[in-house]
Image 1: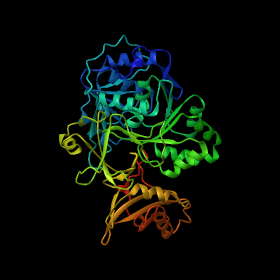
Image 2: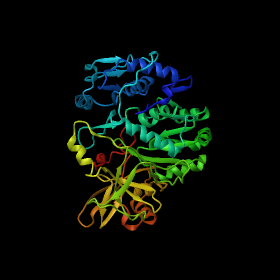
Image 3: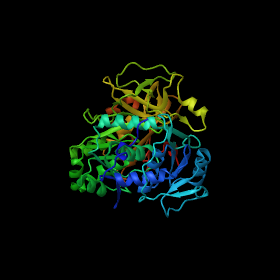
Image 4: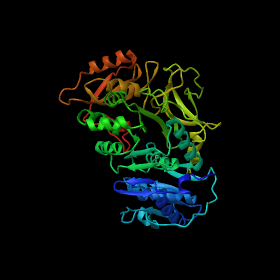
Length: 481
């Protein structure tokens, strides 16, 4: 297949990467990755200690240029999880920045320090194919030990090119983000995306609203973030007019990894004049849908299927849903060149994730509007509530709760009910902990906005909601004291 990074084949002096006050031009990146790639054993897998640093980007790009599969490691993972990942993926060595302290069992691997100043001779093109593995990215492991999703080179190229079409993404764009580099959003979209386009990326190291404003004031054109980041932006806007002005200059604001609440959409738009674009993807599928840069940015939706991606909703028995009425809930299934090739060493899990004709079962529940826009209402395992004969998505109730001025954060779950089957339970962080809104007021608020059968029957007030590193609410941790 053709190169994943055409700009590295005839590099120039344009800045490719910047992390804080450290940067690399395309010429420097080509030299450093070429030198490192020449030292990697062909046909192997290598672990990458994925800190938010230049060295991580150099390591992954070098592995891809060498035709070697990279296994990004989350530096915050515990030793048990790291041990499982290393045992499962069996990398021949670990790539890390000089001076990085590696925990056991990572330090038991042969180590190769990543130099960002290396200069390699012209790198011979390895014999790679579209289906060859590029990355092995481990899922969160919420239902057992993490599984390694094998992502082929074909999927990376397709997803990044489809997003370029949807977002009008070019080499003139400068992306700013502060996401971790051990998962698809931060690494594939946030680092490999700009490099495939021949553009630039500026990584904040650690997300701050001040950092975002500074970069957008100084030439950055795009911002990638997760809902937690945009929520902090929305909260900061009234006190930081310079942030509002900077966001107003951006060409594109993109949110992903979880749903961005409608009230945060509205607060950002009111203050900046900008609409946040949402997209939808998974580790196993990379990107599936997005609101287009030239399309209608409808808050609460993740847009339309990307070019080349087939998407359908199905009933519990697998029957496709053909009515796009904005109300009928079904599980999202996708098919296309964006899919992974399977779970490493887990043919059973791979078979369970795919239908006989190649559709991937996402486990995400959604409705589709008549014009095809997709609106995700939750996860099948934790967010689909069957109450009184209705199938209800937790996400729309959460959005309704967040529109109440007395609610700062909200999560919705179902619990067994002898009469209804399941009753709707709301977990609420009040705006004023000393004076939370009455339960009945919140229930009536939801019933007026959605429908009476979608009102919470039980409300629990919390000081905070449990979240993972990506800002996603961990609903399995929501239990009564």
